Each structure stands twice: as structure tokens, then as C-alpha cells.
Length: 228
Picture 1 (cartoon, rainbow, N blue to C red):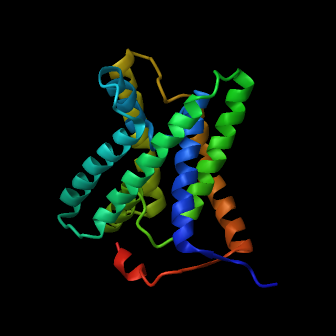
Picture 2: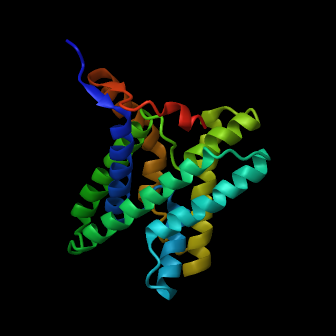
């Protein structure tokens, strides 16, 4: 039986929406955010106390802009295509802010509902990343940084990804201590550890299911513009 076609451009749009909404749901559960977004979340929590207009999404694309600059300095090379990753970060940040506003309308969650929300958010984030694996459009700066730096310094991609995730988690913990007091774990909690342990496996399972039931094809002749 022929598999239905799913366009890679739609995969990009849906991937970012699922990733952003999943992150907002995990934040609402208050069991810990993913290690990748932990630094941005801590910056958001601190600065929003001073500047009420400052959002989680703003913190995301602000830190990704800094990471992009750091990557360019490490690589000693700049390509215009790298800017597409920053545009993806802005798109993600805007969708994240909308998602946060929608989720904020919900009442305070019970412990059981917190677990349900965290689990649902984790699945949505994994599905979002899996969709992003099936598009040619530039990913967020996080993924671009891991890919390009590991290539530059001849480090195995999975190894460098693990190093990057652990570093992000450590930065999140240090920012939590710095902003909210020693041994105050804000944003980096048990859920963060669970996410670190099973997120990769979940993404792999969902990605395999997608490939089993869908045929991914480009709708537009634009792939060559995203050769990052």
C-alpha cells in the first residue's frame, strides 16, 4: 500500500508548533523543563521579574543569537544560510509565547495532572523534533551549533550532543543558584533528568513510526537555499 505524502515544509511548521506547545505544557507542569531550554528559561524567570514585557520566547531567540555569534567565532566562518536558523529561533519563540499565554489560562495543576501534563509535553516535544528531522529548512541554532562544531573539531555527533546537553543542564543549575539562591532548583528538576534520559529514545521511536507510515517529499524547489 502506498504511503501518504507529507510535505517537508509542513513538517517544519508542525515541528516548531509541537515543540513550542510541548515546552509550554512542561513548564506548566512545574516538574522541570528540558536541559536544552533550561538556560533560556532561567534568564526569562529572572528578567521577567524586572521587565514585565520580557517573555520566554524573547529569552530563547536572544540566547540563540549569542550562541550563533559564538559558533561563528569558533568556526571562523560565516554563511548567510546560518541566519535561517536564527529566523527559526524567532519563529519558535513567537509560537512559544502564544502557547505560554494559552496554557497560563489553566488553573493550578494537581500533582497528578502535573505528571500528565509533563508526560504530554515530553511526547509533543519529541514529536516536534522528529518532524524537524524530516525537513530541509534550517533548525534552531541549538541543533546547528552541535552539527557544525562537531564537524569542525571531528567529534562524533552523538558524543558532542551529549556534551552539549549536559553543559546546558549545568548552566541551568548554575543560573538557578545565581538568580534564586544556593540549592534552589528553578526549572531544572526531576523532569529535566527524565527528559535527558529518555528524550533521545522517544524521538527515535516517533521518527521511525513517521517513516513507516508517511512519505516525506518537498513541495517547493527550495532545498538548495538551506544547505547549511
